[in-house]
Length: 269
Ligand SMILES: [Zn+2]
Image (cartoon, rainbow, N blue to C red; front, side, top):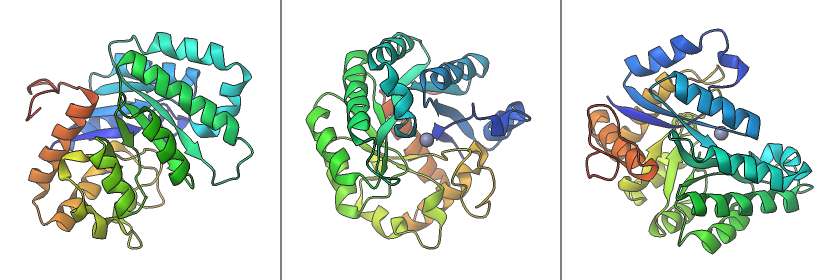
């Protein structure tokens, strides 16, 4: 099996004691590329440091909606720092950004301002944007619509309904599918057949959201195989075919070239 883990946070201290082993296990299980996403300027720099240390790691830079208060202290400074980071050769996306109203709407205005700034940055840098959405589907959709003629998005950890997924795909975006897909309560296996397979990418969101049978424990990129198997089963495909297709999708949207494979823009990556 070959896979790209399009959503990780390996800079978290959860991995301090065994980061080398985590990356090694990922590679051994077929994960050829791992995208780490920043949540602040500092952790965006950590993602770049990981990308410099490990050949398989790539970076995205941005402010997570949970950290929007940090962004709001000095938005101009935050944007100018992030903009500098987008010039690094291993930075392949802007994010993690998005909207999260789950805990309330106290920071709604700041979240919207941050997301808007990230869209502008992604457009300027010619990079895709990685979007977090929790309890903010309609608002996120509205903002995406405003920018999406120029910016391609990955809707990370997609949990919207079938129609939202189809809408995003029709507009040229990608849906990230992770551990939630394997949960017995998930609606995703019933919806995935309605979506264009060439717009789906795999992710783990490590260290969060472990797939079955690891649910409740620290997640890591090697566990992506469980999600790939569940998706393959829902689509009636072999896990090898499915993961090849999803790897090609990840390479296309992130413009990655993997060792031994053609550049991201080509058909088979
Ligand atoms: Zn994340």
